[in-house]
Length: 292
Length: 101
Image 1 (spheres, chains in turn cyan, orange):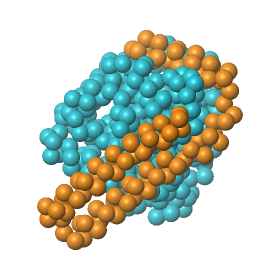
Image 2: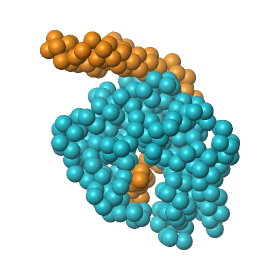
Image 3: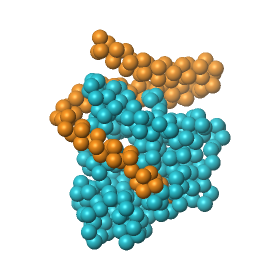
């Protein structure tokens, strides 16, 4: 989303939502804008913890459980048992070790780009670590049930480069959720119907349209992050190599845009994102598109 | 007055985080838990975080520029969309995005 619409558009999305919480205050500085934005999230999700501190990493197991409960709902758009994906808590020692790895990766990522640093700090209030359930192999996720919170499982095998990409990945979901607070995106009755499923860019399966479109935007943001900031280090294990990811995102975009009557259950804005992502991904098909 | 309160709030939040980091670091140095190279690395990490926070805190001009064109009508429109979003039956509209292996 950040490369797709730019920092200013993201700031305006956050600002308009923050204004709803604080209609008269001065929200032109970072701290006030963030506080009002988080205030709105807290007001709308009174049962969910919102972390106002400047440190997003959650060490309290009770807060972790509350945040994880945003995943624990059997919703119409779940196609892969998402409600059972978050597993057990880690021991405090394991949690601290994982959080230290996550912090190191996040610090390294945010040093690379001032806009990314600004936007991440504004919208991501909580990062928590819990295992993936034994029946799933998942690296983490985000839920619109608690916007601004990110779950990471941080298996031992994933690398620092993977974690940096994971933060770009999850930030994209969260920014799409924030965009949806400003602009309606879907007709939910329609997108839950299997005939309206489309290919996803990363799993390459037919999935509900929200998953498919999010995956296209995530893939594009990852590719742009690799081009501008990260390169494509040899230790990447999570997301596919650049030409493969770009080709998959283009196939997924074609699948979305080829759905019958897609414009009747997906907003023009969102379809515009898909078209732009498709164009951006075209430029990554050459193996030399991203430096090592 | 409002400006003073705002400034104080920013400094409190910012100062607490910086102080906590520094206190933790000093404790570890005093407890001789760290080697020289670990101390250097910890200081570098601390300074990086300090710079990152400084950038955010001083981003006011960028925020002002970005939001100056937002109108009251846009905020009202956003209010309607936000109400719909949070008001929709959760089981119908909740999106759970998982990064599967």
